Length: 138
Image 1 (cartoon, rainbow, N blue to C red):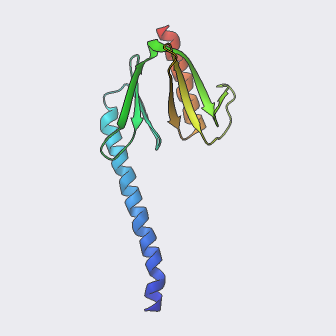
Image 2: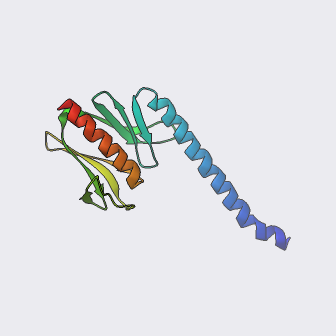
Image 3: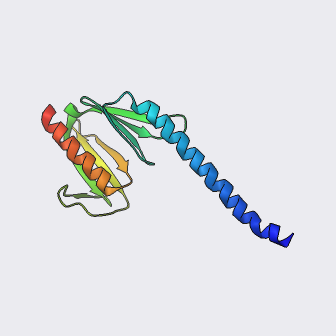
């Protein structure tokens, strides 16, 4: 009986990990269905982002699909910055890591839209790609 009680916490951890994995799988599947409507899309635990021509749509991933969706046109973007730890960084020499990573879109009506990212390299690739797209629409 003592050995059984020693394994009980391990069983609880295993069940918790299995639930977390299933939850994340459900989010990815909901994202996959949502992303089919876009030419280019990204998923991470903080945000989903989709681009169709000049329109960007982003929101928070959930098991039932993205929520809090916001859209804006690249034609309305005045500038784009990559923020790492709250400070703008150079796209040609970004840091290897950081804690608060986001793409900040400054719109022509002075509104700022921040799309969070989990990794600096992924955010850098998207920033470079969107900079090229911005040049195309200007």
